[in-house]
Image 1 (cartoon, rainbow, N blue to C red):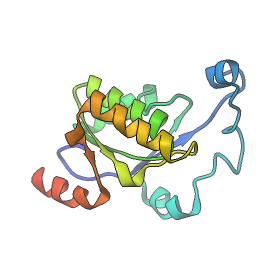
Image 2: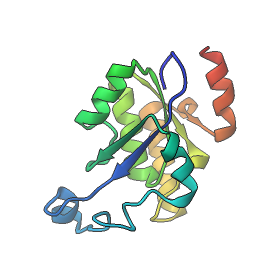
Image 3: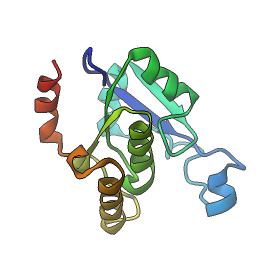
Length: 148
């Protein structure tokens, strides 16, 4: 999200044969449906999303995502999703390192590796981007209002 208003995006993850995920960590989960499908509860958001970014890396900031953020002039990004300790964390840190303001939404994120991995991701995020950047869904309206 940038200063000009709110936009919805969804990042779809694909793991390609021969990728570092397969070669180094032996992970081959995100190659085909149903793993790559947008889950039912998110479908209404996908239908109205202004952009869907396909990514084969942990972060939003592949060439397509980088260009989207730059072209839209977004300065603040709400970051949430699955794999708090990897994809969510990496996107938040990459935003921070690009002088953007990441807001990691703790209660809209989780880990397929369980609560301990989610909690570890949140702990590391406080060190990387600051404890004040970890928020809850209920905090989003006030943050939006403060920027308008």
